[in-house]
Structure formats: structure tokens, C-alpha cells
Length: 317
Ligand SMILES: [Zn+2]
Ligand SMILES: [Zn+2]
Image (cartoon, rainbow, N blue to C red; front, side, top):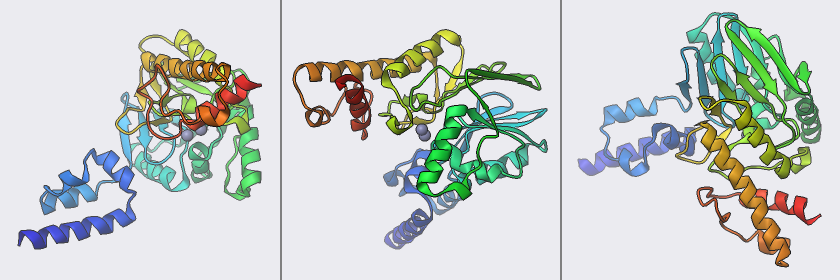
């Protein structure tokens, strides 16, 4: 009996895993496969009916949405809903459905922190809902260039509003400011500050304990990125909450000033390490064999070659 029940549960689980992303599922439930085996049928069914996405409210009306791709920040404002980043069309739809249950207000603004597809592909889901899409001017250019290259122009909703240095607007009680502090992860990354709530969406300017993607094809700059993070921590106060695009498994996407500093130190350690290796006569291939950045052991997992290659490009020339 026990065996049959277990086999049934395992088949049930297997079928569900076909339809769900295993990684998302496990991350969102916080469970391991082994622990699932100890659940009874009722709690298992309840668990599997849970959505693959997650919303965490940071204030009464401001929350973060995570499913696939870069973290979305949203605000249910009395003057209309504001959304920062859009993930993908299918996941954006989940957020839109959820927001529908929480407010009847129309959308006021969609902001893109930068152009990458895991932050802008979902723009199209807001096409008939939102009157304006806002991003840095370079982000719009990068989005257009990427879409032409990938032949996905018909799937884009481009920003109709852009800025170059600072953009601010008061919407209801909230004062929203976008800052451009120079090149970092790309050459078009905005820091989106909800001043009243004191929350900053950093987009992909911070990867929490994960090796970052450094988009040299879109003007990324490691040296400038370090200065940008310094400027961020000196511009905003100690109580500011930061939202980042991506975090390693088990790490949060809502951060404090110290986490920004730690990521800045990590980027500095990447530069220092690559500089030392170049001076010691190492080739690029030899440098890319590194498995850890000295001084920043918390940054683990795959993708270490991305910041190393970028640093090499900046330092070897
Ligand atoms: Zn991203
Ligand atoms: Zn990105």
C-alpha cells in the first residue's frame, strides 16, 4: 500500500514537473524533492496548485513579483498602477491578472530599468493597458538594436518616453525619480527610486551573490560600474531598500546598502585579480580558468567567465 501510494505520488509529481519549471517550483515552495515524499496527498495537491510566481509586499501598496527573469517592482498608486520591468509575456500576464484582483485603477506607467529581454519582452503584455513606457535613451536604442538583430521587432513595445540624466514625476503621494549614473551592466541602466517609499529598483546593476552578466555589446563597463555603485550608496540613505534583478538560489532580491557595497567590492576584486594575473604574464584563457574571485568567496556558481572576460577586455587594452 505504502509503495503504491508512493509510486502514485511520484507519478503525479513527475507529470506536474513536466508542466512546471522544476527550478521555479522548488525555489518558490522552498522545498526539496526529498521533503516532498513526506507530504500527504492533500497537502501535496494544495502545494502543486500554488502558482509558480511569488509576490512579496514591501509596503502597503508596493511589492515585488518574481517568476522568470528580472524582478518586477509594482506600486498600486491612487493615481494609477506603476510597474518597473516586465519579464516575459507569459509571466507579465500573471502579474496583470494578480493586479486586477487588487485594484481597479488603470495603469499609469511602465518603466524599464534596461533593455534586456528578461526585463522588456513582457512590455507587449501591457500594450493596451499602459499609456507610457519609460526608459533611458540608451536602453531604447539597445532594445531596438537587439530586436532588429534577433528579428523580434513585432514582439516589442518600445519606450515612448526617454531621458538622459534624471527624470522625476510626482504620482499621487509617490515621487518617482530615475537616475542615470553612467555605464554599468549596460550603457542604459536606470536606478528607479520611489522616494516616498524609499525603494530603489537597481535592475541588473546588482546580482546578489551571483556572477553578473556584463553586456559589452551594449556598452557595459566594469570600472564605471564600481563608481556607479559608490554613487548609489552615497546618494540614497541607510534605510533605503534596494531591489535587484537577480539573486543566487537562497538569496534575496530585496537588499540593503551593505549588499550593494559587497557587490561593488566583488567587482573591485574581479578587476584587482585580473590586473594581477595580467601583470604575472597569464593569458586570457589561463585567467578564465579561475573558479573563485579572491576576496569574494560568496559569489559562487556558474558564469565567472563573464566578469573575468569583461575585466580582461578593459585591463589588457
Ligand atoms: Zn536580467
Ligand atoms: Zn540585464
